[in-house]
Length: 373
Image 1 (cartoon, rainbow, N blue to C red):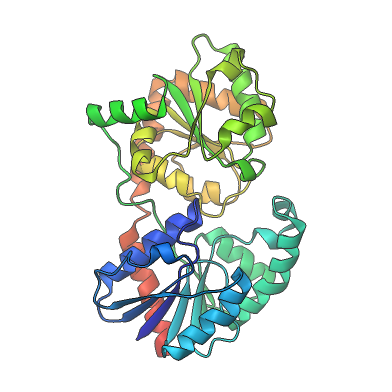
Image 2 (spheres, rainbow, N blue to C red):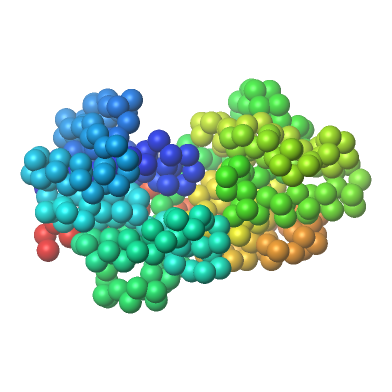
């Protein structure tokens, strides 16, 4: 079988980019029977997988995403006699003459209370196009059971059209105990001795509930002697000081913005933190939760959507709109050594459910099943 893989999302930061980079690397290692045509939009990626003899890398040009997806990709795959197109994101080429499989990372645009976190144009586009992509796709992979259930309910899909396949944090995510590594990472990012960690992004701050995090941290800070500092990781997050009028003293003086943290350094950052704070409003598959669990850090997160599904019993859950509940949760975890240790232990145990071995095996089995149908 000749499999074409659409890789325009390989450069993305965040969960979709993590998934894309890992699933293609793992598929190429596991599957030596099929041939792969890797389709890039960014010429800088040519050569990433050149060491594999069953791989051909191809630069596909397109003036925008729509032209790349819907014109350039089907033509390239037709020209190269591809049997199946796999896209780690949520589109398929509607004019493709071969079979297609896509991955969906949430049904947010179709659900009114979740669509508020996206632009009006994005919501309108996805509400028109997603049903067409589902109709065209030979099969669909979903990253969470909640996402699967939502699409089945909203689009009334044929039985078996969509399948849940959990993905996982990178294989390097584990608790770091080597002091020289921890000291190096602490120094390079200017991390304090005792801190609470949260990750967000400037353009996704509403969905990540950053305003509520600030309020809860300010409340926790005011009621706790010698409070932990708050580390906010993410590109351009230092601009939140102005966006949210964060004061330079008081609780604001104990908030640190180290900027973008490289994936290679994240296990050490998780291992240095005493709490991972993630009361997000909306997540399908919250990859940071799986990373934190694999590194043995206690988690405080929201009792909604994919957050509860992925964390299971390995987190303390709060209502994301309740400032006092979040603040009280922070105090509980940081002041109760037994609870702290229990959450860390349960996180490590639950992290074994999310592995690239299982994800890759299930993904390959689905691709091969579709090709034989």
